[in-house]
Image 1 (cartoon, helix red, strand yellow):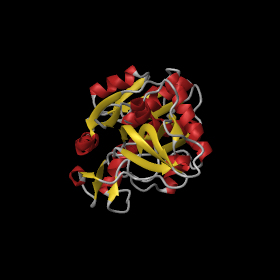
Image 2 (cartoon, one colour):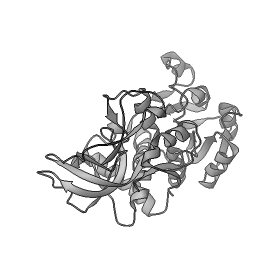
Image 3 (cartoon, rainbow, N blue to C red):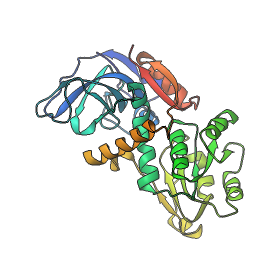
Image 4 (cartoon, helix red, strand yellow):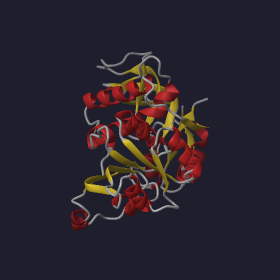
Length: 324
């Protein structure tokens, strides 16, 4: 089978398409033949070395397809089942992958493989951020950075479905229009405008109850200055570089603020948590409360081009690799 591999960290050029043996599932494992592969920002962190992985390595954590083989003791899946996954060891940039059955989820009828691969990781991220890292309530104001991005689009729509007032940021006028089309009440061009000042203006000086920041270094100060008293700063990405260290006394002086840097893995640590999160995501999709925008697709062999577009912030919505 084909697989994208890399034996050193660096830019997109380190990625190579290789022919490798198709793995055989061991006890408790399933083999999924991929129909679509999700591309996520965390993949660039693994490739660059920001989040180290043992080398040489595969890449990617999200895909959807059909179960082609099962190992001994498997009870959750059978051959022919539609399945998807969004966590675990890198290796989804490939024609197929084995993984523990406990880390895969069933794809319900009515949701195709492309949609499942585009939404599962980003959707479960939105789910835990909005429902568990901070249980957002109707009527509250929320700041969502990079609202035209893959996770940002889902956060914006889900927050509006909850009934929150969404203040979104975007890096260009075109991306601002995307955020508005998804229901954002206010949009700030974070490269050109003072984010904190605009947030205060939109909230009559109060600030937001919670801010979700996937951008990192470039938006850190604006995010911190946008929070209401006892507000929560949720930092969950590093698109512009890692955010600076947080001084504890600064949180006190700014209004007894809270700061957290969560990761999805700790919110889907058990099979029960994984199934519940995925079910919530698929329900939001099936009901039409969130729409999935697949902004761009690349053949597996062009994975490096996908990374160049993602890191250059030239993408909108979800990015997929196809297996033709």
